[in-house]
Image (tube, rainbow, N blue to C red; front, top):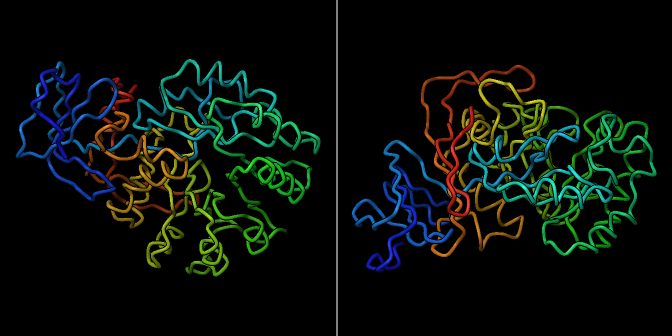
Length: 387
């Protein structure tokens, strides 16, 4: 709650909203947040006086949250299969922090840091691709087994002092592996992860021939399994029930990420997970180039709307797009909460309750409202949605 509202210097910015939500405290009420020098300086309720400020923004029908954290997305500048401008398609749409799923590998990591991270305001962390060229090759990163180069991956991580590499990513789908053996690809990814002490962001083999029961035991505590509602062979749900192997893996410390993408959202699976209180640990967009031009715009608020339409409670959605992914990234003391002294990363959404038909990969429809981004603040700087 408020620090010292009698301070002589006015805040740089004060935002008021009809709802100010902090997933850590569970608070959800009318209030305000003030910002000084890129940091949250105070948070107050409706009964407390709003501090003086150089700029004030009022959103009486807005929902003010800590800046959204998207644990699976594709920030880039168009030189890969998936990458899109993060400031336009993520930051301006509410996501202040994103984890790249392998948009760079060992051989283009330095260029990615300079050209993407060095020129954009979005906070980006990297799950470095085991494929040495990342997602540059339009035919996939593992068309040749030699591209899965453990030595180059380890050297790139050990030689990097930016702190921007969170872990390693590997996707064993047919589209990614091509003719290469997915088991050997994963073995090499685990070898690199063990050598560097890094977690994996793992995309499973969503095809016949390699059962989920055989893939999950290979993962380690702290590894992230993405596409967890995918309706194909590696769905965590079978015959309307959460599978035993999925429960056993969570007990061992495996983290489940939604990873919407274009093919990996399934309403019946999410509904079964909700019914058994086996929710994804994080809700992410996997937004990439194939989403450009879609209506409604594909962004993290839209994915939040979809999981709510599938039965997740609003209060369960909030932490899965803020503090929980922040913790996984090791940034919980900097972002993910509305705490005085934290970075002033703030997202303001509006709940559009007019019924909208949401659709999943298999064509299942669910009706519900949509969270629409109104404004985003990143380190005290204001951004508005780009149409």
